[in-house]
Image 1 (cartoon, protein in one colour):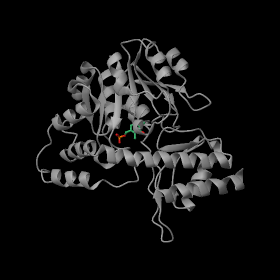
Image 2 (tube, helix red, strand yellow; image 1 turned 45 degrees about the vertical axis):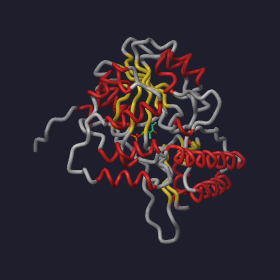
Image 3 (spheres, helix red, strand yellow; image 1 turned 90 degrees about the vertical axis):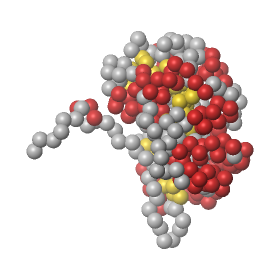
Length: 359
Ligand SMILES: *Cc1c(COP(=O)(O)O)cnc(C)c1O
């Protein structure tokens, strides 16, 4: 039987490995801490906005999401022309590559980093250039600069880096941006920006005006807790933002997502209280793991990274036994989302037991 002809390179496309859902258990409550989701359910005010917007489901959304664009512009003090929305910032990554890179072009990023970068790059027909992280899990910015060629079109800097949680500081980032050719796009993926509390932490919203080639990515999925509604955005020079609007899925951002995002910006103080509580929990988990003797780096995101190498899957299985589903990267490490206090307590307990058995 003859099957339809597909692009040969699509066969080798890696499937996106989403965080697994835990199996249902009778004996204990399970926790999914594999996708860096927010453990808090939507605020009542956000749910009310979602319910109101649901009444309009028979209508297409505003293709320009003008109400949300103007709310984002006001909140972050950026021009409306500089904002481009997408169905999650994952989609905006794809919009950027579609707008800037094709066959023969190179997309450069650190590795290990966010899985969407190689997938979108391959879909576009461009070539991935992956620069290994430093031994301390941070971006090797010098090596990334050295890897730029005249075919480089897009560079991703994931800050903090998913899955390692390590950051590029403002000083480092500025030093980097000053040396990247101005016709090469630098994407600063700030999916976890709200969880950053350290010193000298960059804020893309402050930096983008100084660099017309800088594209800042933000999402409502993590700190704002709207992962299921698929909404994220870029802030960039207006010429770039316009190109990103052109490469977006038409009517991709639903009215429900738009209204929930607006309501979330209105309730930001309350949401950032929750972020603060998660940051406190992150500190507690990190300190406990360190005290147990784990070589765990401080993290600025809502997850911790354990470089378990060959023991990654064994650790994941031990977590599963305890009713917590983490995200393994076989042969490399395990990413553990900071979540409900009970889930965090179990992580600490599993880690202690694992060290006794394997340490
Ligand atoms: C979660 C995440 C995103 C955003 O995902 P969306 O839900 O598509 O907005 C973007 N970048 C990184 C690095 C992430 O971890």
